[in-house]
Image (cartoon, rainbow, N blue to C red; front, side):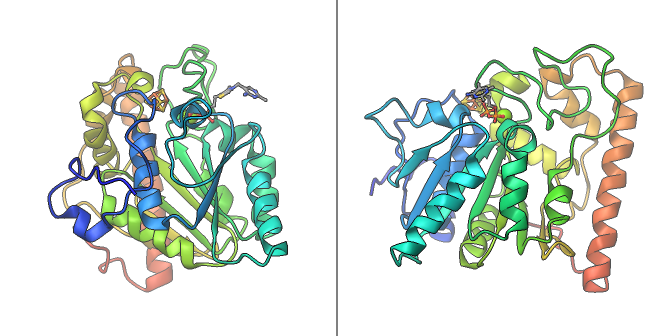
Length: 316
Ligand SMILES: Cc1ncc(C[n+]2csc(CCOP(=O)(O)OP(=O)(O)O)c2C)c(N)n1
Ligand code: SF4
Ligand SMILES: [Mg+2]
């Protein structure tokens, strides 16, 4: 176990755990949100974990064979097969009587929202005993920033046809998984490490299919400076673009955090070069749809808990 512990806020490691299962010698871009996400996920899950990764940036980040940035076994698999590969690893372990290992699929948004969706849907519907984490950087980044089903309205990519898209919010992967009535769904942000680690730990203890969406800012793809990753991840939550929540059995919704003074969506858009061309009208429409989705989650929280007054206004 390595001891590179200096980069996280003083005192934080006491709360989220000092063990490190990811080496600093990976080959991600500077400021890669997906790299911070893996570090936090493994802190939560520990080394009794096996991960399977389809084609994506993380295939590269881990390093060329025989180098390997993780201190746990990693099975590289084909682009569309993350969920089914995890299912197979779990089945093989079961046959060998190994029940105390978390099997995690770790895929990008392209491998989840698009090409891996049928395998994901099948595994979710069968309630396979695996944890599926999507690090969502909102485009096919590894191959040069192509548009995916997760690319938000207004975002530039190298393959976004001008005027060809409807101005509606991106595909709602959380709603898709909720419709499968899986035991556990959560959204997490690397800007809130304690919430992040808590949810991965909770997912580790649950039997059946678990799904976690991680918003993973990507400096080259979103066009912002590498040192702003955590700021960008936080701004997404503070502007209600990316609500932090949990959904149990597809229907019990818990909103984990309600910012006391939400930031304007426009501030989030303005901070990233990929939205540079978005005009005021489109920005206002995006904000309207984001607030509508947020209100929907608040209503679902009220339906679950009888009130929304119990949603914390502070979170770490
Ligand atoms: C069947 C197939 N089609 C295309 C590719 C090329 N490819 C490799 S990684 C990648 C992008 C993956 O995007 P995403 O899942 O969002 O992960 P990210 O690169 O953003 O981390 C593509 C298109 C491939 N490896 N296999
Ligand atoms: S392109 Fe983006 S997601 Fe891929 S390694 Fe670089 S920062 Fe990370
Ligand atoms: Mg991606």
